[in-house]
Image 1 (cartoon, rainbow, N blue to C red):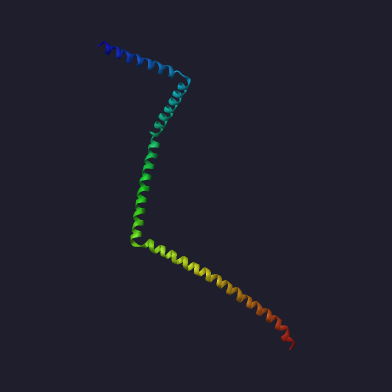
Image 2 (cartoon, rainbow, N blue to C red):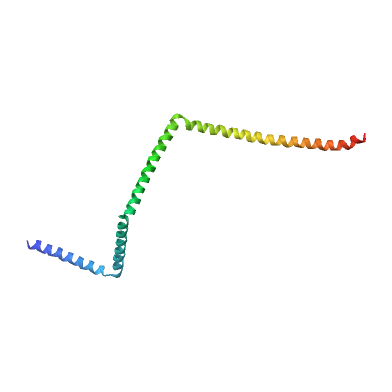
Length: 143
């Protein structure tokens, strides 16, 4: 039993010694600064929590919740619509239509350049004919 008391007394002595060391370290300037920063942060956190409890913020938070819910519902509806469009083949038809339109535009683009070249050639021929006519008129009047 004496050994038990000595062991417990030793434990108490070590605990007190650790507590004294902790008290000594708490007085250090760096620890004091850290504790002051922690107190300042806890004050800010408390103020934020109080601000979040105001009726305006409660209403804003509720509005954000409703907006999020509406966005989720709209997203689900859009996904359902896309699935339906895929099932009915509308998307595939639209892709084919776009591909066909692009091919047609490419064809028209090439044909369009050809038409511009033909138009320029015809204009050139008409100018040549006009010049020829202008050259022939003076000669015609002499005969």
